[in-house]
Image 1 (cartoon, rainbow, N blue to C red):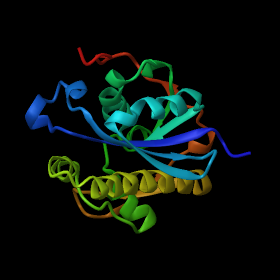
Image 2: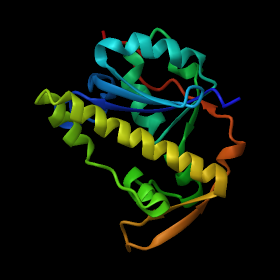
Image 3: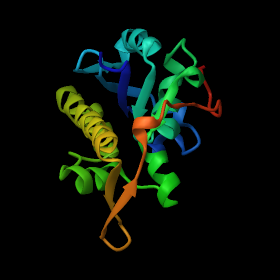
Image 4: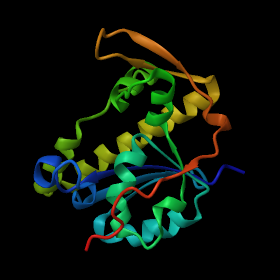
Length: 195
């Protein structure tokens, strides 16, 4: 039976310029993208559909993401009745940071590990939302979900991933052990209400 894991990524309605760096909970969700290992399906939820997403999230044994602890979950938390602190989380960016001592981008890991790239930047997603180009926004978000899933799968299979450094543009190997990780709880360091 496949694992009861979800891969998560979301896009926002606002930028840090709009709300300030310390106000993740004010960025507001435009869409949440998900890959479900149980059903082998990709799904996308708009802001008005987050309660349906929460029903599936409650049942997940592990939530996998890239910068999910410091970004996605704090942005999502005000929409949920579920406390995100109760979720088992595997943050691929944090796992790489533990080994390398610095943060890396999803783009640099996807490019070096999979030979694939992101289709844009987060600020592009806000622009798509503002222009009402929801189908493009959904495709962008699901592409990030797909990249995160494939990086996770690659790491489980090979015990390593790669990234391209933005300092010297060289490719570096990162040994990892995601196949052994069951996830850690998120620390309660952000607001859990929109109001």
